[in-house]
Length: 337
Image (cartoon, rainbow, N blue to C red; front, side, top):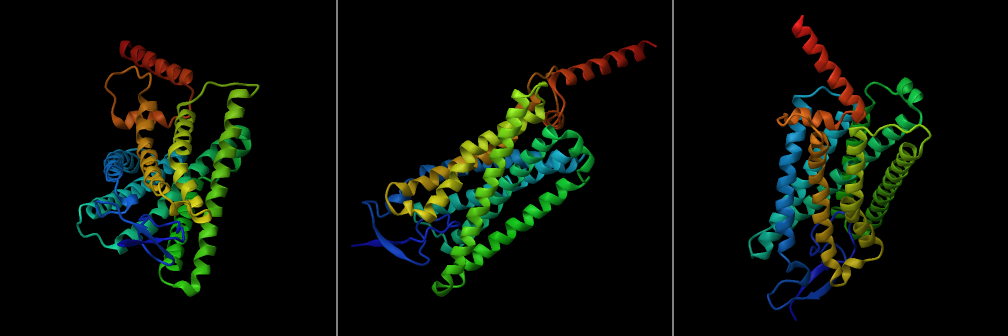
């Protein structure tokens, strides 16, 4: 019987579910000559389309925040978040191209897929880390505003983002080294490293969830309720989309390692579904920024820079209207004089 080799170790970083690294088992081929888990070519096409759209949107955000807008604390986080999303979408778009090539019998090297899988863990960790940092900072600024503004270092956003990228790259390199180059005799080192990555992701998720819930309770149930700012709406929508679309990939990869759910058909299709959702999450952030920034705008034609700036403003809607109205009145009075 013709069969293919399949990875049974549940490697966290493997984006190709048909690569053999350590332990293997046989999976029967279907009538078309492809494994059951590789016979759906619609999902890679869908991932490719979503990834290309998301790359275009994140490129616009990077271009505006990097070269045309003044750097603030929140804009530094958003800039690095867009960079992580772009990196993640690049990995998945190339991976989808390789899957499509495999489906049509074209050449696609296994090593390229392994490296893509190893590289994808870096932006995934960075994305969750940056969201957790944003949510935690906003929570501190609402719960203890005086202490936060008095004790917060000026360049803390840039320092935190730099530490996040260093830690993410370090974890990705260690996982690549332990999983692909040490062999079976040192496989326990890879398992320890993978456990550290999983535990760190769980810690970030708990931090994100706890700070988000505390912020919601304080804003909606506090004794002194204030109108919601656009920044709060932007962060809330970004976190909500991540919990719906970005988190399932991490949950699946965790179950992949600990429970081995990828060994049984049709659970092997879940990975590609979670990959689609993750690409939706990375592609949705620019859309959220421009929808929030253009909501209730009084001018029909606004530049993308103005729309993005409004989405990151920390002033309530009423204050924004009052400031713009006073500025307009002042301009009219000055022109008359």
